[in-house]
Length: 397
Image (cartoon, rainbow, N blue to C red; front, side):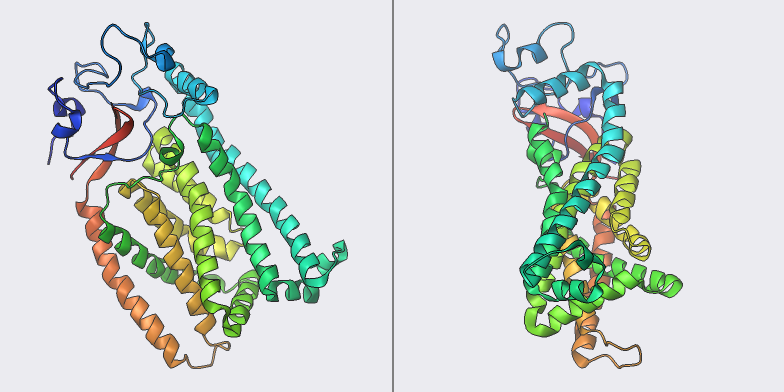
C-alpha cells in the first residue's frame, strides 16, 4: 500500500510538486475546503507549494483571493468572470452553506429544470415534425395514433423528435459550467482522467452485457410496456428501410452526449464533491433512470446508470461513460431491428452471429473491466494547486 498522505509527497519547496508525485492525475474539480483532509498536526496548506506571484507582490486579478486573513486554500478560479469569482468567494467563506445549496440544486433544482425544458422541447418538436410531415398542425392530431405514427415513420420527423428534446435537455448543463470557477471542462469532467484507453474500451464493451441481463430480468418479471413495444416497431421500421446504420449512430450518439453531460457530467460531478461518490453516483443514477419515464424502462436502465456512474468516477473522466453509453445504445438498436417480430419465430443466422460475437466480447471485457476496477488507482478527493491545474491524488489499494 502506498502512502496516501498528501503532505508527505511534497517536501521540497524548490522543485515542481508533480516531479515527486507520480500518482497525480488531472481529474474532477476541487472540493470545498471543509471536505479536504489534512495530516494530523498540520494545517491544510502545510507541505504544499502554491504557485503564484513572487513574495511581496500581488496578482491584481486574484488579489481578494490571495491576501488577508481569509486567504482561501482553494486555487484561484479558472474562469475570471464576475459570477465565477463570486461563487469562488462564497464557497470559500461559507463552505457549509455552499454544500447545502449545491446539493439541493444538483439533486432537485437542476433535474427539475432539465425535465421541464425536455418536455417543453418535446412538445415543440412534435408540432414542428407534424408540420413537416403533414403540412399543418392541429391539437387534435396529438390524440390521433395514425397521424402520429406517420410522423415517427418519417425519417425527418423522427430525427426532429429525437434530436430537439435531447439538445434542449443538455442546454442548461452546457451553459452553467461556462460560469463555474472550476472551468467548463473540469466542471463536466471532460478531462483525460487516469484510466488507459484499454480500460475505456473494456468498460464500453461490458455495458451491453449489463443492459441485456437487466432487460431479461425486468422483461421476465414485468413484461414489455406499450411504450417500449411502440419504440421497437419504430426502430424496426426505420432499420428495415435501409436506415439502420444512421439510426444506430443517432440513437447511440445523441443520448451518449446529452444525457451523460447532464447526469454524470454536471450532476454527479458536483454531488461527488458534496456528499461523496457513493451517494453522488446513487442519486445521479436514480435521476437518470427516472428521466426515462416509462416504469419498465426506468427499472431496466437503473443498473446501467450505476455502472456508468462508477466508471465515470473511477476513471476520473466522463469520456469512458459516454463511450459505454454509445456502445450500449448502438448495439441495442441492431439487436432490436434484427430480432424476430413474432415470439415463435426462429432468430436469423445474422442475429445469432451478431449476438454471439457481442456476447463473447462483453464477457471478456467484463473480466478486463473488473481487473481495471480492482487494480487501477482509486481517486481521493484531495485537491492541490499546480500552476494552472487542479489535480486529484490517487492511491493504489
